[in-house]
Length: 276
Image (tube, rainbow, N blue to C red; front, side, top):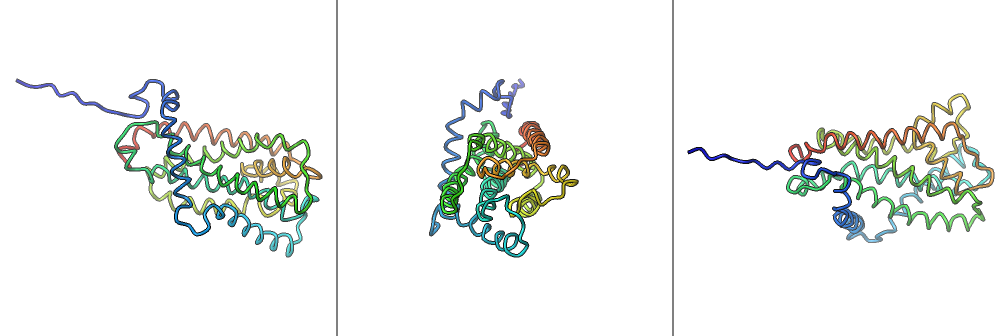
């Protein structure tokens, strides 16, 4: 007599018909992963969370010396250290969140290969960790603005909108690289290159105003240009101006990156447990 053998296959999006409701059901796992990564980031370090300030501060010092002292580039009517550090906030958040999200699936390979849960939880929790560094650095920026007497105006209320734009950019790019990193491990070497290269082609150490007018729209193809310019416009006030055409282009590109990142991640998600 031949016994029938039933095979149970657990795949993302198959075990639960409503994937997005599944994300809410696994919210405690999201909190746990985020809190775990926050603790691990500075565990057994001599100065702890101060690293969240030291990195942008040292980068600011270098950029102020190179672009402010040697190149003598304009600073939109604000002290050059404030101009640079205001750009460090969104850039450091994006760089950290992008790198952490991109490596998150590989770092949690054991858990992914054994149990089912919406894999989107993993890179999403990694992005949240970047917000912790962002908030710590923001305190430093407030102190720097008080030192130089820079007072924001009404535009500061728009800052959450530009922070949301940075989150979408980091999440979308992180989802793309996380999914590709599972399939092709070469992408783990691309992550630091993208972060380093992006730092120099983004207006972190200088104002976008130094870019010639005829190249401004092309320059805005880098979605972080709009994010960084938006942060400066919201925080610094005064003479700071915003290229609205370039901003609209950056917003559109960020939305495309975010939407396609979720689409590609979901498309590849059912293969993660087998490949990883």
